Structure formats: C-alpha cells, structure tokens
Amino acid sequence: MKKYFNFRELGTNYRTEFMAGLTTFLAMAYILFVIPSTLALTGVEDLPEGVTRMDQDAVFVATALAAAVGSLFMGIIAKYPIVLGPGMGLNAFFAYTVMLGYGIPWETALSGVLVSGIIFVILTLTGIREKIINAIPANLKLAVGAGIGLFIAFIGLQSAGIVVGDPDTLLALGDITSPTVLLAIFGLIVSVVLLTLGIKAGIFYGMILTVVVGIAFGLIAAPSGVDGIVSGVPSIAPTFGQAFLNLGDIFTMEMLLVILTFLFVDFFDTAGTLVAVARQAGLVKNNKLPRAGKALFADSAATVVGATLGTSTTTAYVDSAAGVGVGGRTGLTAIVAAGFFLLALFFSPLLSVVTAEVTAPALIIVGIMMSSALKNIDWDQFEIAVPAFFTVLTMPLTYSIATGIAIGFIFYPITMLLKKRASEIHPIMYGMFVIFVLYFIFLT
Image (cartoon, rainbow, N blue to C red; front, side):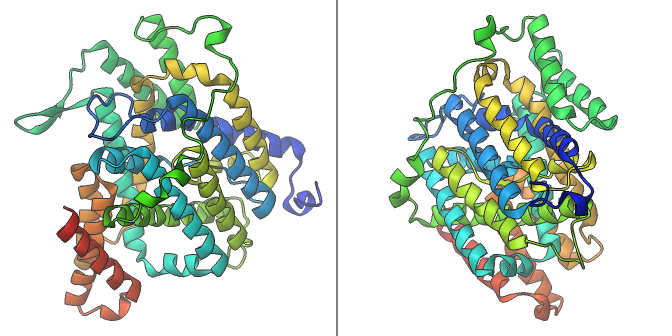
C-alpha cells in the first residue's frame, strides 16, 4: 500500500493519512443531516400537487453510501486526498427549484441526476468535459458559485426563522425572541466562533452544541436510551432504483434545463475543488493536475451511484482541505473518510434531534464560504459585471439557481458583443444563450 500511494515520495505515513481522513470526515459530517433534511423538505408545509417528500432515513443511507463509494473511487482510482459527497448547492437546487419551484416529483428529479451522471461519464471518457469547462468564462463560473452561496444562506436564514415573509416588504426580520430562532442564532454564533478559531470541524461541532442546548432547554426531544443514538441501518428501499423507473419523464424542456443545471454546477464545483485542494497538497505539477481524467471519472461515477441509491448529485468537497491541512497527501485519506461514512450508517436515530434550527447555521456558513468567490469577479469591467451581478442576485431573489444561471448566460454575449469583444465568446456560449432564451419564452 505504501508503494501504491507513494508514501515515501509524498512524505506521509499511515498515521498521518488516518488523521487526515478523520479530520475531513468530521469537517463534512454535517452533510449526513443537512442533505436528508433538505431533500425531505423538512419545515416546508405546502408542497406542489404531485410532489411528495423523500424518505429522510433512506436519503440518510443514500447520502452516507454515496459519500463512501465516491470517496473510495477517488482514493483508489485517482489517488487524491479528496472526499466526495452530495453537493450542498445541488441539493438545494434539487429540493427548492426542481421539486418546489417546478413541481417535479423527486423520482423524476433523481432520473435527471442519473442522466447527468451518465453524460458526465461519457464526457469525461472522451475528454469533452474539460473542453466545455474551459468554454465558460471564469467570471461567470465565479458568479454561479457565489450566487449559490447566497441562495443557500438565504434558505438557512429562512428555515431558522431569522428571515420571514412579509406582505408589505416581501421579507422582514423574524421574531428573534422566539426560543427556536434564538437556538438557531446560538448555533450560528458558536459555529462562527469555532471556525474563526481555526477548528476545521467547526460546523459539525456547532451542530452538536446546538443540539445539546436545545435538549437542555426542552426545544429538542432528547434521544431515548441507546436506541435513540445507535441502531441498525435503515432501509434504502424507498429511494433505491427510483431513478431508473422514471426515465421516461425526463424528455421535456423543463427537465432539459434541470439536467443542464446539474451538469453545469457540478462541472465547475468539481473542477474548482480538485485544483484548489490538489494545489494546497502540492500535487499540481507544471500548472497541471496529474490523473485529472481519473479524478473526474471518479466524480462522474459517484453521481451515477448516488442517483441510483437516492440522493442528489455527488461531487468533490472543498472541506477536503481540512484533511490536507493536517498532512493528507494520498488516496488513503479519502479511503479512511469513506470508512467513517460507512460507520455513520448506524447513527441514523440522531436525525430526530437534528431539527431545522440545528441545520440552518450550517447552511448559512456554507453560503458564506461559497460567496467568497465574489472577490475574484472583475467588477471594473461593466460588460462582465452585468451578467455576473444578475447571476448572483437573481438566484436568491427568484428562489432558483437555474434562473440565475439562465439570466447571466443571456446577458453575457449581449454585453460582450456591444463591447466589441465577440472574439472572446466561445461558440458554446451562443448555444447556451439560445437554450436559455427559449426556456424563458416557453417555460415561464
């Protein structure tokens, strides 16, 4: 194993890789509770006709398994210390745009994730995926990431009751004297303090402390005995294989947009994470990422597996930087993290204590982290600032990641052509322009 992972060349050992895997798992453990809560539409009272909630226990199992399998792929095939899991931005798109916004049943949405994963595999094996990534302007990539961050943070503020609807002003500050709202604010403050102090797993520890305080003040029901903490693995039957049973429902313009969005967001989420984490680990050579094709294949295959199991798009997590920070340099880090995700399968009863007030701070903080991309957008160039601004702003305001992407991609070729910078527009961007214009004409 030492030889396979090049321990000597990379200056690492078993203990370092184990601690790196554990650190990354702890930094990512919050997704085991946030992803199922989001996909089950916890806290959402009124659902569109024909839309039902996903089984939270089944999604918990699917999320843990997808993270484990995806991380094993990345560790064994690509040999990178990068851990995979269902993406936070993509799970929000799945739940709040596809299910709530479009009224598409979760079974059909899973079919969309499956198809996007299969397309990913094909594009990766043919090398086209990297070419498409390069066709999208860097500023728009940054705007999409930042916009998703604002959208996720808005969802967190809303689910916590910190921001509420208002008939006069659309939005207003919620009742911050409410015990549940105060609990969410406490969780947010604690998580911010921990992360500011440099504690890598601050989000996860913040959730634990919030649960403890919630139980102490009677806001959260305490687990009853050992059975309330540890149990057998829940059944995955409610979600397993549903993606294959509803493939016939994806042949609509609306689902085409959904699949394109799954593709687009995961495209840049994965590529950006791979480069950032690999660079931090000192694995980038001559400005190139060794085994990039294998890493992208691992990500693509994990999405297919995740959709089959019953969860949203699986992608590389930037939280992997936590493990790299303590010395992780090889795929063994990812394999160790995968083992902890499998172990977590036996702790599903804890889902009952992870309420909306507990998960809201995690959403807000992830949103803050993703919004950091705003600083790298070239705001001084008006032709760039306009599409970037509309992409970022319209995601939370329209409650739709897809709409934000569509508006930004429509404005970009317009402003660039007016500025006589047509030579900088890739032909793929013109194709996107036509697709999104047709979307607004026929589907809105």
